[in-house]
Image (tube, rainbow, N blue to C red):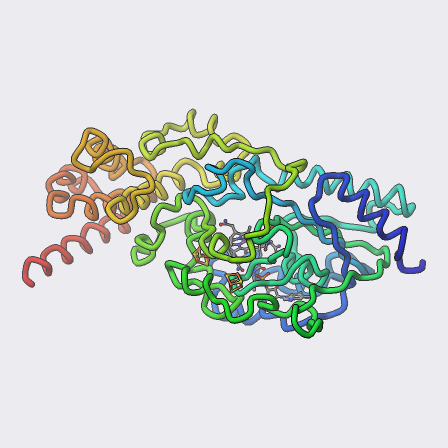
Length: 406
Ligand code: B12
Ligand code: SF4
Ligand code: SF4
């Protein structure tokens, strides 16, 4: 089969755009650029995402994912919210303000598969598609296809959509003439998938990350990343990272928001997204006082649901503990009725049935009401048996007594 090119290739692009994807690019699967996945995993930067380690070979070799694959069709879905409040708030990662994109984009991928079958007389073994969870390096291939370049923040950045593309991949045995990578402005040349290609001297994303998670341009230590900690970590969030989390309750867009390449970005068509912006109206008390039925109703079909109520409460405790430094969630002063309700919620959560929440509630109370906390929690502490929570108490008691000594 001759490689697809010219009018036919453009017709395929158009048809895929018509399915609701906001960008469609093609790449072959020849090796490109320096891939640092192995180095990343060897350094432990993948934290406890062991599934990434297990699938390295496949990620590096698409032939192991689909034998005979020779092209990747890279698909981008713009998720910049169309509502200013939703776009500018700092509490929720913007991608989470929709129904789970794994489900809604999958719908488009299924249609894309059917379209390939029809146009090229293929059967379902001739292609495979993924959105996020498959063993494919989505940013590497998207950069190779010229959809954008991988910025120093690690993100695939598009000249049109800025940092706001979700990526999906369709591997296929259909040979397609690859699209060129983005060009550097000055000399017109560009090594395939060069990291930070259009970043120039800028390093805002690296400098603004509150937990110093970007250890070198494009390389992120997930252990230190707020996104990892608030979404993927299923246990205790390290104490030293909690202040840096600030007002972020789920995910983090700091190194994306700061990027100057967003200035041209406009909200997408949202054909493959279903917005749920009302979540941004939730107040801190709505969350701290949330029960399981309400949680299920509010976050139905949303990515936040996978965090479970205990994960959300854990994150809310951290956000509460940061109230003195970040006013973003404040609806009143800490010495007002509102503050009293925050305190009562935290006291309740310090003995919450799921142990994972408890150290974070204790942490928040000590941060907000320091020396008063031992008395507030005297009864709760007496009944505590969880190691992590007991460690939290001891840490604060030591800290307060050494403060007194000084
Ligand atoms: C694990 C993961 C995370 C981890 C680790 C992130 C990281 N930087 O590695 C955590 C949980 C922290 C995370 C956070 C976020 N994530 Co995430 N995540 C992934 C996932 C599943 C794998 C990424 C990975 O392999 N990382 C390992 C590093 C080493 O790989 P890499 O970042 O892709 O970059 C390397 C390769 O591209 C390679 N490379 C370069 N050229 C080539 C060429 C070839 C041929 C090959 C094979 C490789 C290669 O070199 C690069 C540097 O080492 C991808 C989906 C996927 N299947 O790819 C989504 C993905 C990267 N995440 C995404 C998003 C949206 C986010 C968040 C914005 C969510 C949020 N708001 O909180 C943050 C952003 C954090 C950041 N600055 O990166 C999007 C990014 C879209 C985009 N435009 O780039 C993806 C692509 C999901 C999707 N389908 O849309 N994520
Ligand atoms: S997502 Fe947030 S914590 Fe993670 S690297 Fe970017 S700014 Fe840092
Ligand atoms: S903030 Fe600057 S360095 Fe970071 S990705 Fe954007 S352009 Fe590149």
